[in-house]
Image (cartoon, rainbow, N blue to C red; front, side, top):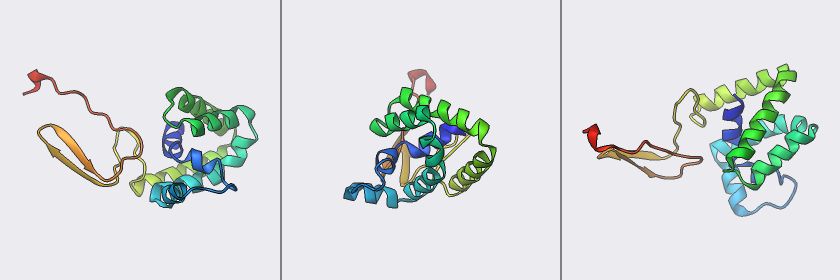
Length: 146
């Protein structure tokens, strides 16, 4: 679950970590999306607990500084795992929030893919019209796949 939480939060942490400061228009736009609203609610529950643990707060700040940094994301996942092992009630609340986000199509777990926008496939490739938040990867086609 920690990986899914980090995947949802990472694109928004640069904005969420600056709450209380003046935010740019693009921050307001990003947080107004369904994923942004869910990330904001998740962070509101999680932030006081993260802020009370210096290692977790540092890991969150590192992800906010570079949301695509895999090492920073891994460090935040580890800190969340440690935190949620102790905070069972918080873990249950976050699990429910993540299930709700999955049902809304905002996050995907167990190898699923959640995409906002249109997806078109032709000739073994996928074209996306709209915006993808996060990473999209496809295995390369081999000539012997025909």
